[in-house]
Length: 343
Image 1 (spheres, rainbow, N blue to C red):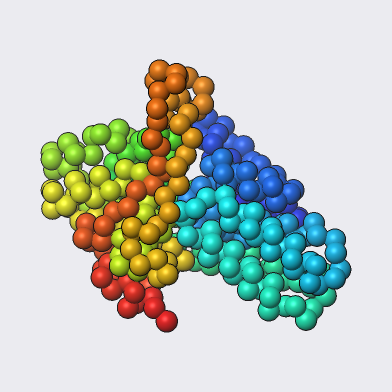
Image 2: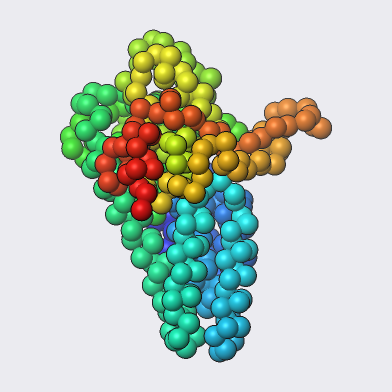
């Protein structure tokens, strides 16, 4: 699969996910503003991928700072961090990655600017490598939950496209498939931006994993008909009490799963766990432009022009609906998140 994010000779190269599945187009970002716009416009999306991209954006921006005075250089790089932090409010991996870059910046104040710039690049690349490793570990830790012949429902895209590679929820599916298990995935289309239809279905077909695409409103009936054995989704932020913020529509899937006694799992790296957020009630929820709902791809109108639109990008699934959270450390119940990942 084409890499989602690459650092290539001083350029941040991104697979433009807004063009999939119709076109495979690579964006070459030579300036931090291009990275910020790519995040805002969903050209790169998925919490882990956003985090890696932001780290590379900081490294890229730092290369363009020409000041040799370290305090001035640091002040300008911190402004770059603020620019990237303002792109999307919900995915905590964004802030986690930027904090890591800030820590490197501050830990190297005693070095000359070129050395600091080099170390920022190395940290961004380390974050990328770690993300792939965490996803693969998650896959191994979660694959046992999927039995041979299982039918799995997923929502949005939590695959290789949403990460630096391999995926979170789809990483679990991939690992089960690699173990020789027959798996069949039901994919919600994920309105309004259709990440399930455009991205998840495409990824699974590329991997040769059987997939059936359904509309979001069909989740209940496929469960009612006994076609789903378990649900696995990703996450953009997990609060200390185990509440999970994920793509809008996830909450409805979790409630339906509970009503039909179907296990509902969340797969996410530890970088998605935010112990500073006590519960889902305090997770900031991004609202997106109304044209995402009223048009397809900003072009074909499917609603009356001028209609009022409410378009939250995420919702919060209370911990009571989550069977377990799959991390690189293993399966954790929501009530043990703070205990497991606290210092």
